[in-house]
Length: 375
Image 1 (tube, one colour):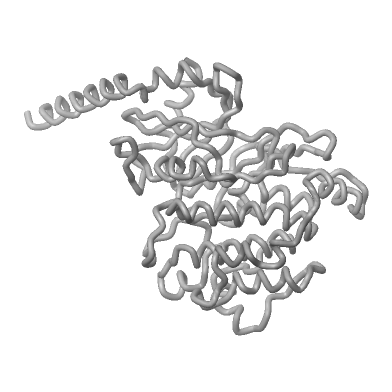
Image 2 (cartoon, rainbow, N blue to C red):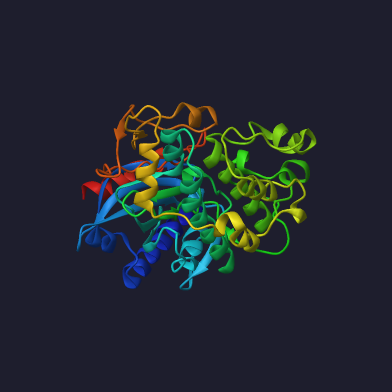
C-alpha cells in the first residue's frame, strides 16, 4: 500500500507541476508554438544543444535541453527554482559578447534554454586550427572582446568557469565574439571555490596543488592560456604536471614572432602566484590590448594574403570529430566534414562543440527531444 501511495503522490505532484507550467506560459506547448527544432548541434555532460528557428521571424536559435536529474547547481529566477545556467545567462543578458538568453521552458523531465545563434559562425578552436596560429593583430581584435566580456560578467557577479577556445563563437560576418556554454557558471564570490567543472588544461596550478579555485584569479589564468593558444596555435601546458612546474623552468617558450608587449601580458596572466597575476581590470588597461588595430575585414584579408600556401583555409564543420578533442577526454558523434570559407563567401556553418563525459546517460531525454521536434 505504501508503494501505491507513493506513486499516487508522485503523479499528483507531476499533474500540479504541469498545471503551474500551463498557467505561467513556460510549458512545452508554448515552446512548440514559438520554436521549431532543426537538428543536433552538440552534446555533453551538461545537456544536448539543437539548432532551431523562431517561428514568427525564422530567427536562427540554439535550443539546449538539460535533464532535471543532471542539474548540479540551482538558483532562483522569477520565483522559480532553476538550473544555475539559466540564472547566470539571465544576469548577463545585457553583457556584450555573451550569447543571449531569449527564453526558457520547464517541464517535469527537464529544461529548454533558447538562445541566439550567430550565423554563419565558427568556434575559436576551429578558427585557430584552420590558421595554425593567429596573426597578432587578429588575436588582439578577438581577445580584446573576450577579455571585456569576462570582465563585464564579473561585474554582474557571474563566473563562467569554463573559458576555452571551444566556448568562444566568432560571427564570420562581423567578427564579433560570443561566450557560450554557461553549464559550469556560478555566482562570483570573494572566497575560493572547492569544486571545479571546467577544462583541466585551462585550470590554474592552485587548483591541482591546493584544491583551491579562486574566481577572478582563475579567470585571468584561463585568459592567459587562451591568449597563448591564439598566438602560438598550441596550449602552453600539456598536462597537470607542466601547469604546476613550468614556473621552475623559466619563461614560457613562444613558437611565433610576437611583440614583447604580448609576451608580457601572457606572462602576467600566467603568473604562478594568483595574487601576483594581473587583474581583469589591468588586462583591459594593458598597452598591448589598447594598441589600435584594423577592422575585421581588413584583418581577415591580410590573413589570407599572407597565407604561405595561398590556399583557402579549411574549417571543421559541425559534424567533424576532432582527434585532438577526443584525445583530451571527450568525444563527438558524426562523420568527417570540412567547409572552406573566405572573407568574401563566409560559408554557412556552425562549429560548436559540447563535451560528452564518458558514462553519461543521455538516452533518457534524447527520445523526448525528438518527440518534441516531430510534433
